[in-house]
Image 1 (tube, rainbow, N blue to C red):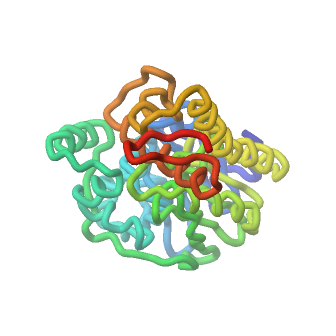
Image 2: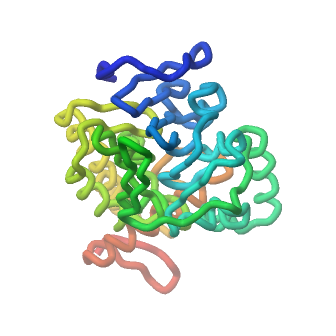
Image 3: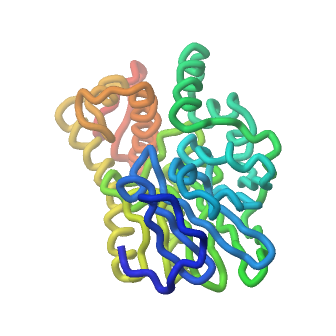
Length: 313
């Protein structure tokens, strides 16, 4: 993490929450630099309106600087980005139209994640209520690409950049030039597009567009935190994007060993270590692998027979 540009002007946060400030923008760091299940909290102090971008777990430990937020602009909707909404019952919550149902109701969030099993849905709900203080926001309002929120002395501008979710959006604070890039987190894991609303093709396009934004500072929800050096940002972005083609190469290598069904490919694991198991892993692996197979099939590199067995062409 690079050094902040200015000293913070907000009331002192509670012990243990580190932050940096860029003009009217403050970034409060979650545990382990915002590693999931936590995240990094961005707050913007306009002269008319105080705004928050997403609300990760750390928002519950910031204090007055967060609790004074009158506006929440969500970059996308997942459980770890809603963990502080319960503290802001009177704040106006804005979500990209494509993610709006996921913010407004539990069935909407389940559908976006691709969870169809009712019993599993209840188990996940209990876990999210316990670990993320989850509560839906039926009052949330939709916004579109290019939306702008004038806060007084600064503004937030929305750049729709889907792939991780259908509504994933980069939020740029002007004139500071601070871009909250959300779950384009530049982690070693690479891009995640394993939900029902995710899209590999869209994520590829998003990663190509991201450097075009007029930003001077880039803030990730998780892992990396803050970038103030464009060269380092571009280097890590390239490594992050390269994970996509590495996964395609891994699939080709698995099929070179022997033809396989989708279930067999899922068991081999493309995203997670072999043998790793959590409630979402098999479905995320399957949705991810199918998207890669579709790309490879369109390129004439793989084919599938009537029994659902995939092989190299």
